[in-house]
Each structure stands twice: as structure tokens, then as C-alpha cells.
Image 1 (cartoon, rainbow, N blue to C red):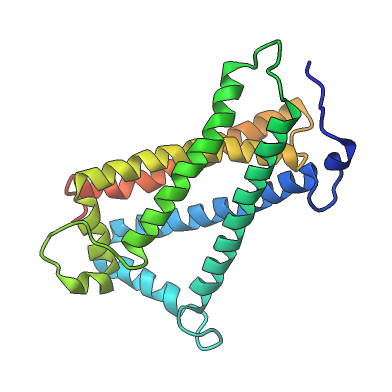
Image 2 (cartoon, rainbow, N blue to C red):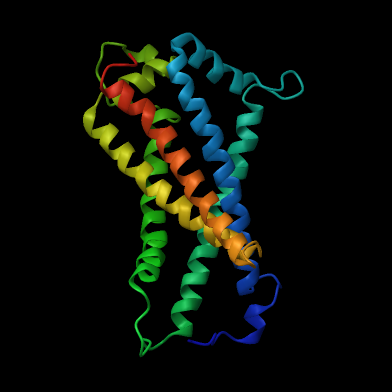
Length: 239
């Protein structure tokens, strides 16, 4: 078994240490998991029809009024997500750099293929998801670029339901979205499992099985929940 070659100071819980970075990555990952579950729930409201979905979208913008200004809650959520994203990416980059520096030469014994694939996937799959999120924001948030052409005109930017339906009637956009959701599911499965290890929730065989089942269940529920609306739009069930 390979021994940990990292200096002792990097294994402490101090700011900048490896344990701190792993904990930071796990904590920000939990924030993203909670957000994607809430976002998935909102997307499923497409099945309730245009009025219900648009009412839900408007409620998000007015939630907390008059204590909060219009769009206040969404602004808070957006700030938390941006900060979490920065910290998550920074932690991942630092941990990858340290792992590379700790192993300047290849192991004499090859790592398991599954472990190698998993580590590489988290790195490149995470980058692919980041690029997708940027496009997703451009498509549905700012500046709301509509790639469809169903005769809705410029007013579509003020009709969330129409924008979503119009967009997912474009086959290649739906395909990109579906591939991104597969990537998200794989990222969630590995990320939740890793976070469970980092937070000390896998100390026993039973705990490891539970953590693994939870990771798989959350990943499947989120991925399937996200892909259902665009597929139903593409095949004309939602219009």
C-alpha cells in the first residue's frame, strides 16, 4: 500500500492544509447538491403548465417582500453560489496540484482503473459542467439567448415557460443538456461519496454502504429529474 508522502503540516486542520481544503470542497459541494435538488424541483413544475411554472418563477423573484427587495432572495442565492463555486474550484485545483507534487514518479504498481477514471472524471467532468453552467446562464438567465424560433418574438424573455419550451424544442440543445445531466449525475455520485469520507461518515462497512447508496440515489434522482422536462418538450408532450 502506498504511504502518504505529504508533509505533516499539510495534514493538519489549519487554513490552507489538505484537510481544510478537502473539508472546504465537501462543504461547498453540499451547497451545490442542495441547490440542484431545489432547481430540479422547480424544473419539474413545467409539467403543471405555463401558468403554474411562470407563477413559481415570479414567486422566486418576490419571495420575502417587503422585508427583502424584489429579486433579493435570488441575489443572496447567486452570491452564495458564486462564492461556493470559486472556493470549490480553488480547493480542487490545489488538491490536484498537491497530489501531483507528492507523486513526482509513477507508482511501481498501477492504480486501479476505476480509481484512475474516477479521479480524471471529477477533474475534466467538473470543467465540462462549469462550461455548461456558463452557457445555461446565458441561455436562461442573462441575457436569455433563445436558440429556438417558434414565433414567440422578443417577449419570450418575459415568459420563462415559453423560453424553456422554445429552447428544448431544438434537438441539439436538448442533447447537450442531456449529456450535461449525465455528467452531473456522475459528478454527484463521486462527490457525495468523497464528501462522506472527508466528513468522517464512512468509518464502518455499514456506513460506507449507506453513503454509497445515498450517493447513487441522489445522483440518479437529480439526473433523471432534470432530463425528464427537456425530453417531454422535445417529443411534444410539454408544449
